[in-house]
Image 1 (cartoon, rainbow, N blue to C red):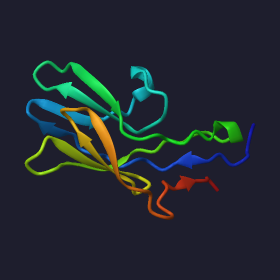
Image 2: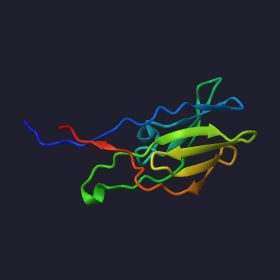
Image 3: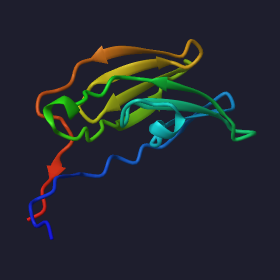
Image 4: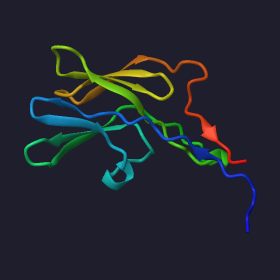
Length: 126
């Protein structure tokens, strides 16, 4: 039986989807199942009428810690909201970085860098 401490990630925030012009935009929490290459950082567009996935966008890169022997824990959305009067979303991730998403052009533009000491906490069981 292994009794060594095992690091675990605190639960990510429950970020509500945003609906614009018949499309629901939501964080893709199962990005690996849809061709993603990292845990977190993906936005998907779903047709509200049919439930069909229209597209997926990588909003930001998540640093891969595997080369140093550490599991990559993921970096997820903290907030997501529509920019008033525009077909754009503003997303903030758990590190405090903010991004502007143009849902028509399907582009992500960084607005700010991470704030110091804002990475998601890791819990180590006692």
